[in-house]
Image (tube, rainbow, N blue to C red):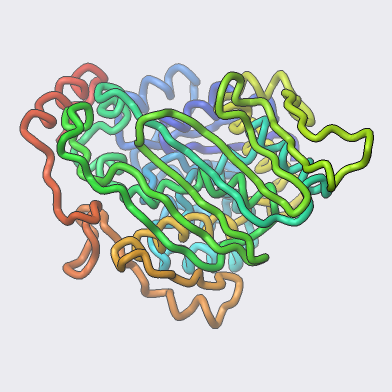
Length: 413
């Protein structure tokens, strides 16, 4: 096909595709969908495309593919509807919000024959692409241990502005669930797969004055230990501790590689021991790589080049009619690590096994597993968003949050 006609759900995150990425890849934006009418209409007018507040009506529009940038916990049902309508799907994280949704999503992709791309952009950052290239060349040997960190503290005003409404997903999502930015690079660099999960949660902190100026009722951060299918161990750290940073570290049996923690964090450090290398080889090398292709376009697209390459892979998959590397199985497994880690944390951090989503007989056992903490969806035996139990926003936090929401034009609850 020439141009790929695309509809985007979610005018916040989704606008980055429409404005910066799609035009580079012969992808034509033809429709937008969102519940926030004011922002939807403004963006639709600006980009001269049709707008919808009803998702079912949106799916009646003439288009080839749907990009889902809606709420974190709503992706799977939207993806399944789009696949069943005959559209290819690129879905932001998370792929699924329950294990049962993961099963249903896998089966929808298999039955539809359509392309599904999990839009996790961190593996495509400059340093992560370089480390994948190094690993695949055998420079550091076989993977033994890895670390992935996504630590992202924010001032209260910014937290409120990106999470308008008491029940906005960012205000309550358990901290283990936002794990794919830290896990995906490790999986993609090493081609390994999670098989066992242990979760640890740093609980809600009522003494944090900055956080008390929000309506957040979830915990501070989480650490997750993952056993991979080759025996390697991975430690993940996320989300809102002080000390912003995105960092990946890979130990092989012949060396170490990581991006720098200080200075230019796009730079890669490669370290090998003298007894593992030849006389003329460097023990340690620190350098800044370039993207393997489309360097300038990638830098302009956002998220350190990640947004460009995610969308590039989606377009290539559609044109070749071949599932991408970040397919439905990897997307569901990455997302399930966060779910299972929360189960583990609530059970004294005991080990939880990862289902085999490629095995029809095994995954069918989890088809009705919809354990979840979402407001309005959780049942009596389901967890609260915090490991400490039910938490309610403070009066002061709600008052301050509403002032911020008024500034950005949000007037709901």
